[in-house]
Length: 238
Image (tube, rainbow, N blue to C red):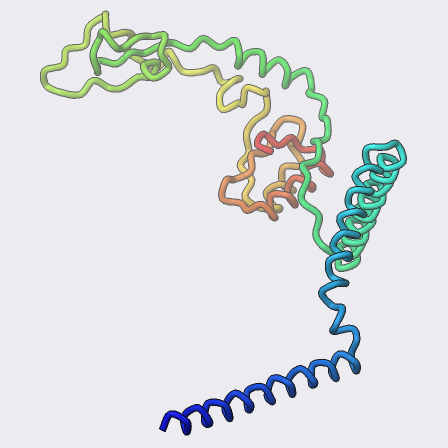
């Protein structure tokens, strides 16, 4: 039995040796047909070295005067290309008809008449009495604060109005007829809600000024302002 086993082992060894020989022969045959495959590994290593060498050469050039000049020239070329692209985009937008953003124009200068100037001076020189009502804490309430410079009627059973609490408003404190309902600019206010109301103001454009209603939208307001400039009417809230 031992001899039989030895013979079987020898046969297997011979088979393995034949297979190895075939594989070696095939690789040699392939290398003859395609020599590039044989030297593929050898070619890759020097290529990497050449790339590194080029990078090092570029760095040296950058540090030198020639390298700096090239670098500046490249930057200029990039900037010029960027500017050209932006100009092309701008031209395309203009061709398409893109709306430009609204820019507020300076209002037309209108000289005030002598009467209007006098009225504005009278309005500004008007005395304003400070009526401090009987309300709130006296330690907090002061004439210097705008919040307490208004009259409020004293309401309540227990409230007794005294001289300390300030003046009581009466008919004698009414504004004179010349200044009544007149804007500090010296013009009479006229509320404008549409174009027809503005056109109707043309008769009294020297005395009255337009005040555009807050309910009007942006588009309509622009149209009214243009028309007001044409008619030379003063607009108080532009």
